[in-house]
Structures are given as C-alpha cells and as structure tokens.
Amino acid sequence: MLASAYPAQTRFALRAGVTCLTTPAGAVLLNPPRNEKLTGLGAGALRALKTLNQGPATAAEMATAAAGDDITALMRKLTDGGWLSVTVRDGGRDLYSIRPFADPVPRPEVALPAWSATLSKFAVLHRDSQGFVLEHPRSWCDLRIHDPRLLALLDGPLAADSPVPAAVKTQFMADLQWCGLLVDGDEEEREFTTRSWNTPDLWFHRRSTLGARTVTWDDFGPTRWAEGQFPELPARRAVFPGEAVPLTKPDLVSLRLSDPSLAATIEDRVSTRAFDEAAPITSNQLGELLFRAARTREDGSRPYPSGGGAYELEIYPVVRNVSGLDNAMYHYDSTDHVLRPVAPLDSPAVRKLLKSTSATLAGGAEPQVLLLISARAGRVMWSYEQVAYANILKHVGVLMQTIYLTATAMHLGAVAQGFSDTTAFATATGLDELEECNVGSIIVGSPAR
Image 1 (cartoon, one colour):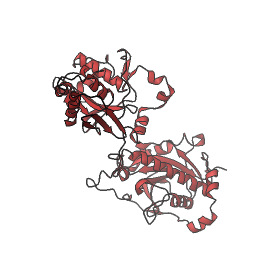
Image 2 (cartoon, helix red, strand yellow):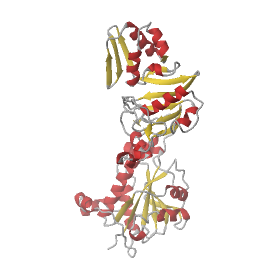
Image 3 (tube, one colour):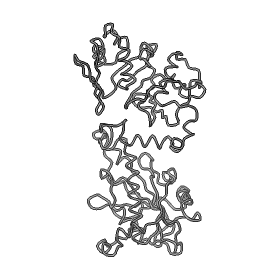
Image 4 (cartoon, helix red, strand yellow):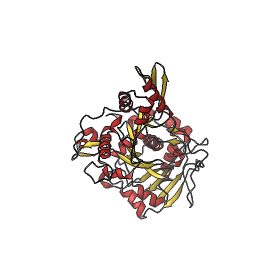
C-alpha cells in the first residue's frame, strides 16, 4: 500500500520514540533495540526525512522537500515498516490514526469479503485523555478514532451506512484488517487457542506485562505516579465501629519447636471440602490461624510478602460455626489482632456470600468460617501503573498459600474458592468497590474425620 493511497491531507510522523539521524551518506532510524540503516538515498529523500524530523507532514509536503525526487519507495518502506504514525484526514478534519508500537505484519494482499468482515472479539474500544482508542492484545499498533462517524463501521463495511467518503471507508476497512482488528467471520471460534481466551483475560494479560507495547518503565510498574497529586492511603484501614473481640496469640517460640517441618506441611497440604460440624473450629484456633498467617508485625510487615510493602489485603471472616465465637461477619484488625463486627450472619448480603460456597463444599454444605479477602486497591495503585491489579492478585495467591500451610500445620482444613460474590461483599460491608473490593475467598474449619 503506497502512502499516496491515503487521502492527500493525510499526515505522517515519526512514531513515538523514533529518531531519524541523517548524514550525507544516508540515514539511520533509531528505536532501541530496533535500528535500521537507510542507504542509497538521494539528496531529495534526505530532505524529505529532515522534514519528518521537524514534525508531521503530508506526502505532498515531503515530495516538495524532495524537489522532484521520487520518494514513493521510501514512504512505502517507512509506513509499512511501522516507523511512521499515520493520521488519515479528509475535508480538513482528522479521521483516524495508526500508532505503531511494534513491527507491523505485512499488509494483506486480499481484502476480507464485505459480507464476512467483522471486528475481532479481542478488540477493545475505550476512551482516554486523547479520545477513542481501539486496541487489540495481539496487534502491533493502536488505532485512534478521531471522527465518531467511523464508529458505525467497526462491525464491518455492511454494518451501517456512513457519511464518510467511499474511498476513506475502503481505506479504513483495509487498515482495520492490517492492524489485526478485523477478522473473517467466526474464524476466532474455530481454533481452540483463540476460542479459549476471552477478551478481558487476554487484554489484562497483555496490559499488565512487559512486551512490545511496554518497553520502558516510564508509565509501567512502581512509578509513584500519584505522589504530589493525591495523598497516600494509610497502611492501616479505618477500624469498624463496635466492640472488638480479642483473639488468642500463640506462642511462636514453642511453635518453632513443635510444628511439623515445611517439607511435611507442603506435602500434607490438601483442599478440604468436608468439615466436622459436630466438632467445629474453635475461636482459639481461628485466632492462632489469623495471627500466624496475616497479623501486622511491629515493623508493618506481615507473614506473607507484598510488593512494595503495600499490604493492601484485608480479611473478613464470616463465622457460621465456631466454638466460642458469635456468628457474624467480622473484619480482622491485623494490627490489634482482634475481630470487629461488620454485619449479622442473617443479613441478606452475608447469606448470599455463604451461598456462593455451595459449589465448593461437598454436598452443598455451608462453611464453618469463610475468610473473604479484600484489597484496598489504592494502596497499590498509588505507586504502580498498569500492573497494580495483577500485583494484587499475586498477593492474594501468596496469602492463600500461607493460610493453606498454616491450617495444615494446625491440622485444620482449608479450601480456596476461585470466585466470590463481589456485589454481596460491597453490600454487606457498605464499602465503595473502587476503594476496597473483594478479591478472593478461602474456607477454613475442622476437617471431617
């Protein structure tokens, strides 16, 4: 596809991060770790490259700078090589832009049939500070839509009539295909690899990892982006009102001598799905479990690791059958090592939380104790960009393993859930999900004999 195939008003610019160095002998395109030498260039082509160095330019402006030299091949090389961002314009207005961040795939030789062309199920359209952006987790570029008239075309050329010129419509569909955003009918449902992944999982995976899209730490990882703009959330959440219920503190010195070895604990760990209702877990055992697995130490750390020392996770025990403890939903205050009442057990939201465990336990039984894990997301998001929620989920994993191993060492049973009712949790606690949300749950109790 030649640059001249785009409308005459289309502007080309070196893509973000690219530097073009020109010398009398040629030019070098730099975008570490990728570099490319351009050789055999005439004086006109070098002048055209210098025009690009000064900012966005049309093909005509670069041709003028080239003073009659043919730069068609150069423009094809730069555009199809992904060195340029392309902003398609017509009628004096920006329509859409192609913003490469990786090496492009070759342009398709054959356009998709109009009757079968459809938007990939992995395509994600959202708004940011610059407007609409269309992304695909497996694409080499983003496509920014400046003119909302193009939105009607995203489901294929036959989806709706569009007031944009026919030539622009054709070019737009060709670029959607080149960018990997347009597919042929149900092709993504015919292969296991594409059918097995869903949109949020794949998008989240790509957005929270390093790769072609993210090669620097400018807007990724522990950037502390909120420093100076928003106050950092305190390490300890505000306590719930109500009389605190003190918990047992075990003798850790004695436990170092009497506990089974780490090897034995790991090898003996199992998921327990049946519990002894006649001899339930005791309040002393629950207190010991929470102290050993999740208390806040004097230095602010806890027994499990947490990226950046954020320790954003909180535990809410839903107590249904614990010897020596009233039934209710509590918050575990890991600093004071006490339980604080949150909601009665018979409240509709708490009943829904218990009901969600029926698929986990044998015979649809209800748990003796359901430990709901929440995240005060701002503790992580204040410092981390893009990877914050991924880190939270990793923290949930290490906390669950810590609870599993502690329960095994104490001869208690435990089984983690792969889900929970986040809406019911928000209702039961009265918390704003954006401030603190349910991110995991694990059941503990005395195992059935």
